[in-house]
Image 1 (cartoon, rainbow, N blue to C red):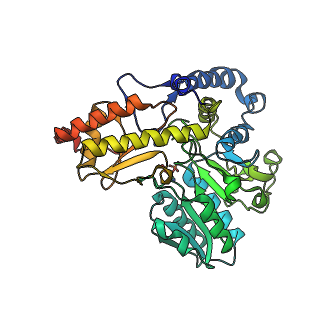
Image 2: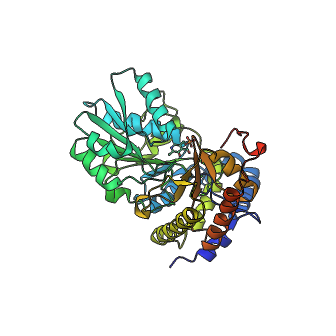
Image 3: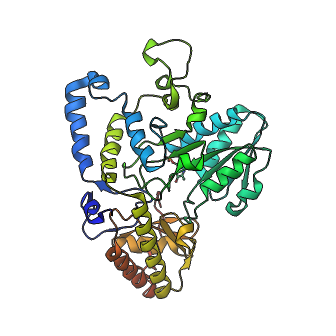
Length: 397
Ligand SMILES: Cc1ncc(COP(=O)(O)O)c(C=O)c1O
């Protein structure tokens, strides 16, 4: 059994804060500051440029990638870290389209994160072909997979509602129709058990600043199934993905395996923070995380519905159909969330009307859930959200 008291002690959570936003930005694992400090003062400070070799900076994207691979059912050597998730979506999509040249449709859904759709749109404009991006409702994806579809590109857990797609079933349907799949795991990695190999996924991408606690702007990851990787032509053919970056050839030759999905110089300091953050997963079972997350979310839904009838559940009621977050709708959702944050209960708001709460058993337990519901009930029953300072929209919601 995973010891969640042990994992709780590994995080710095400010006094008086109930942090229900680890689905957006994970809190700080205590070990990160020390590791980053050492990388800066000892590695960068003393090693200077020698650090690329002596401190292993050059191979870090693969080593840290393998650590994430263990959490998402990806074999060694199939995951690499770098860039942002939007960039990784672009890379995966460009490669997948080239692997399926007779097809012209990218199929996605309206629950996908807009940046994924924007990247697809931008890619199609750049290649100026007759490809099309087809967006259907999440529940219509399966029926929309036909012989015109080149790639099914989905986010497994809907960022707004938490609705979970059946990765295995949809990948199977896609393959039966001759299509490839790209799975965005932004709200899955570290939140729910993921088995990329078992599901037969072709590509997967994800960020590391949410449930993996890598810090604001932490670099992203990309997975390519071993059966495809040697056929992938990198669209972003930067020198770090070259077979021999330091040969400085004038021609691009893709590097071996997943290395070719690297682009430019890795963010060594950010990667050190991420690598230290991943230490908290040692000894943690994703099955235990999942069971605890569903229990906490179910308790939260039950209590909020009993005490705050004016909040409408926006997430699936069945825990098996959700990721690790719960959302409620209210027309004054933004102000409600600001009033909660002022009371130390931190979640977030997603337009047009959703308040969103993430349940992360590594550092959230039943006590926190019950205290958060007390605060929500107080804010709702006494209209504490109805104040001018809570209505003013900040840049980030
Ligand atoms: C599902 C999903 N995809 C893509 C992105 C964009 O990621 P990035 O800003 O790292 O490019 C996000 C950001 O939250 C996301 O939630």
